[in-house]
Image (cartoon, helix red, strand yellow):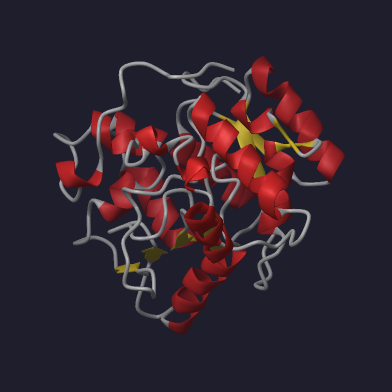
Length: 263
């Protein structure tokens, strides 16, 4: 709830339910068997997230506000996970088919990789972030990571150290790269307006609408794409380009200096 750019974003309303509830709804659509855990913080501001987790029947874990690596590790240990699938809570348009595609690759090559994602390098539209790791991999990161960015963002210690981990990546089968041009995640008011509009346009006819369905919609109605297009390519890397070995300045951009709209 303490997002600096858009406080309370995961509880914003989408067609009568919270954004978090809509995202959980999409995560439940994957065909792989997985236990979903909402991992939030111990701060009183996040009591509302616990209430929502109880309301929608999803187990939860409360941990550190800023050390997300510890939060994910402790949640995984508590639930006796062998494989950890990390999905950010600000990706309510994530395509279940993409999650399954990355899982398929991980399990088909399980003896070859400790960590598989679709982010290094990213090619899918931003907001389809999938990271999969063994519990041994997550444990090694938890035991050794110490930089603030490694603790805050959970997995940088892993993908920044390919000499220590066997790392795999899944690219978009289309051969396209929309990671810097299409933004389906939420950090700004315009992102919320975009996401809410996509749900209004697509959900009634097909509550399992895909990434392709969204892209078709944006081609038909470019005014929807333009709602948050100014933030396409803006991500957390921009604050740490000088610190990251495997990320270049071409994989991020600075945010516009002023929001065009306010909630």
